[in-house]
Image 1 (cartoon, rainbow, N blue to C red):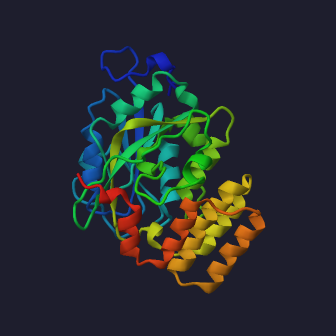
Image 2 (spheres, helix red, strand yellow):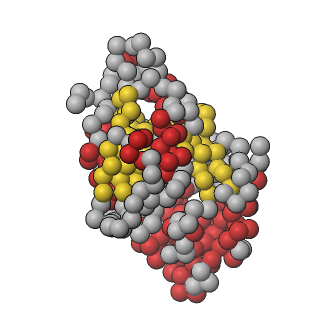
Length: 324
């Protein structure tokens, strides 16, 4: 495989001498929505060469939906229920193209996703840049679609943890870099494995560790590039595991006490309140005291929202309130 493309080589025109090539890694447990996800990759308007890798993490007797073999270039299988991080690591290790892009089996790319992201890379070093983009959130119960979010894109010299966690607003337009939006060089993706030991915050952990490598920058395409379908069964984001959240923050975010305090308020405290865990609330408040600073108003409001019913939280903090 040839090395990452030079900036002048990356383009969306099929006629260019060096069209970009992308390995798309899709972990799955066999949801029927997988076919929709794979079709969205095949419907890209970009001239990029695409290698579509499906990693099946279902049980040994579970089959994929009929038609997957017609859409995927390769189907790999884990030992079963090894987790999304393991499945992504397996798919990335098998990638043979210049770039890696990720997609979850219940989400879908918009047709111009790769076009928009390679246009952003035209002015950057593609071997040291992680590209994201805006997304549309879709309420699976009602079909309502949000406005494109996030409202604010990451700053030129802003760290990814500052962007994601510092002064996080309690609104649907809050800063995000969802996994299905991500595109980066295969070399960089293979050098930074997903942490398979984590119970939650795996995506944030990967982004933070990517961002702490020398010379890495993050950029977001200004257009919406994916549709994120909310409410999928078994989503870890709907759980109230405050212990895993606190453990990750203690390990990954103590470099900056203000970022740490904002994260503890918005995530760990919210999970503890949602789970009605007195010990969790005490642990979160103790962590805030140890940080020596108060959380910003936005993260504090998100934390207190843990007292609200889950469905109401989704309505208040998701951007599906801005239905188009």
